[in-house]
Image (tube, each protein chain N blue to C red):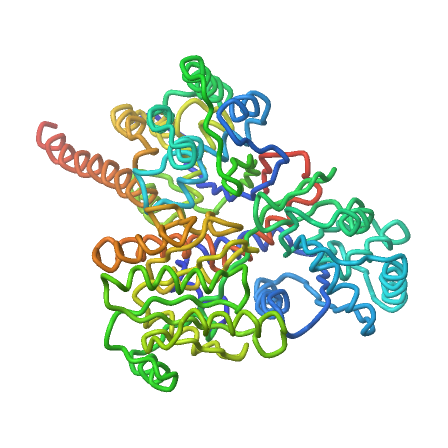
Length: 228
Length: 409
């Protein structure tokens, strides 16, 4: 097995900033979306995951939720909800996809529905604070134990912030496992769609995959001894 | 057991550990928080809990209160109403009273701290001292709905607000056009307070017995001041429509009718709308009736908050925390607390409210799921521990105002 550095668990917690941008219809939504910061895109596509983790897989992002429930544009709402977030390696690419989708829909529609007063879309931004948790794993067994203990903020950091805020390409767990030569396990975790799991469901799935791999290694060990 | 540890079984040990971790990054920083009263009102209630918790986390925090005469507090009461959008006279004399009281307090208060955290309009002018003193970070926390304030009053306050490093509002629609970052921090409920702690079945029965509300049929409740903006008459109309098909009681529990002439009028119109229906219970409770409110919410089958305008509407979180399905007006901070059809029901009309009362009474399984989801939503987002975490992050944000990813070493 390749030598690799231990895994240091970090955690992210976020503070929400209010912006002065608000939209009352789809045209305004698209226009603001072109200009807001990546942190605003991140907030509106990710805060649901931590704030409403018990609801998953239902409300996926604020744009889909607002378009469906306030503007009652069901078709576009469904499309926005179905955006395959795991495909996007940066917030800008994700922003472009959302804007393109709304633009395409607007081209076909003449009349714009307006949000009732009080239900306008208010853009917010997320400030992520990243801190080390002090938890360190040197092997798979310690890694599984730690994943069982970490808070949602830590899972969120290694799955969401690492990929999109820090643009690391893939989730931190898979990256670490790959460096240890655990390619199959890394790929299995990378294949999990964190956007359609609750945070607790995601944690259980990661732990299950890692424990299964540990069991496989243990099964393999005695056979190796016999053949030697 | 420390106060902080008492929250762990409710919000998880990981949540409490996270607070401890964050607090370590504030080591050595002296925080001063200032409001206008040590007792009474929501802000003092929060600070009475927050300040000792910060102390337990090892944060050096000091709480001070500004002093003022009756004339000053008469002016600030009008400022408060005007910020809520009610037309109020605001004269040059009022401005002078406000400025003089600020100066008097500046002369006597010790503002030496690394972070000065000011609540609401009354002490907002203390920031005028910052140029004369150290380079501490200043934060203004506005607990009021300032989405449509009286313009001259807001402009007067903005002269001071613009000298802060950050402003904090409770909901996104309360944000103003300001040069500094505006943070959104929602208020919270305390799961260990008398209003929200767990009650035994016998405690609930005793209270309801004392209030003379029989528990023989489903109870639909609204808890709120007797104020037109809470639409108590609309609640009675919705109840009467639903009542044609579903046998139930209505409890309207509130206060504010004793010292407020408008409250008295509203209460009279509520009695008139109720007529002689023996299943409508109108309870005018004193502000100290926390256990009573708790018991009423817990004894209810459905809780309403049919507000027409709302600051934040924390009674919604109180009811959701008790696992109750809530039907509420989609105003103010209520849509932050309820996601329609997931964690409660949002309505806009009397008819809609009546429709959903019937639906929920006839679909107890769905009603139970709404309540369960609501309770989990409150656990994650509207308990005191989340509020405390965001206050710690807000302190840490000072000095990083331009950053959106902050690495804490």
